[in-house]
Image (cartoon, rainbow, N blue to C red; front, top):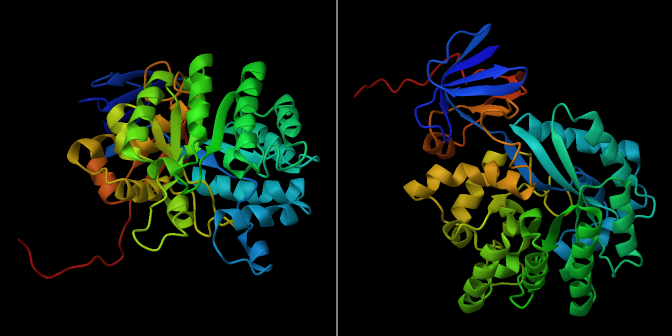
Length: 418
């Protein structure tokens, strides 16, 4: 029996102790009695582990290779057009090496759950094979979900739809798509039908790159929502990006939000990446590339934040720091009222878990795995304002890592006191 004590536990009013037995939370509360081992957390905030619900682990750390080609417009579609050239020389060993580096980046900063989109418009399935191996090899450290993602389109790439289906047979966890990249709206809509049909056929969750464009007439999310509403599949479906929904007129948007609530469709926004990629053809006013995060939160529609890319042709930055993603997102979405700040951490924890459809086994609750992180602060406001680092990550009651708060050899002294 192990007990973590002197903690501020997120979402548990007044509770300051977590009792763990055989890697499972036995109890959360106060004065939980003696244990074989007691660990004092020094009044720090404990929350469920970070979730990165949208990442491309087959793309990470490839930017330097693309820079050799002279690419530099920084647009979404340029990067997509360049990717096939790199993919020709992709190896399982190289893909695993880069992915492991990115996974370490994320896990060392508190992430324990990752959903990765893996390009399957490749008859050799090189990246998919690499990620299937890593999902098993790293399962004690991080949960990885794999989306069968047709980066070049189900129809833009000849045979793309069939490759997605084969990837599901090989073990991918989710069905992906990119309807706004198909050659015409008709084929984008056809791909949405295929995605839902494949998900139902193989009992898989859905995560679609949906309307990642500034075009307010790109409305594939409308069709996706209708199909999963009729199939009662919304709770297992996520629409990622939906940038164009941030450009849609209010009459349409609020009508759709009523339908999103009925279907229970989930959404993911990628604040840093889409702020960088979108609005490229705007002068001023310049759009932020973000979907209607604030309105979704106010309407009770599930929305999570994600990293998306780490140092690849789509986005040169990124380091797996979900607190940085949160900080950017709450500024862009303007969600920093006192009441919102109390819930903003959900955007990189519980809301992401719902997108992954793991809410039944995720979180700080009795009977669930003892997975949590310790932040260098004592309240949601404190850790968000200071972009607090992660002091420790605990998985099934054992440390993945632990570090001390910042210590100074020489501390700043202003020479005055008040």
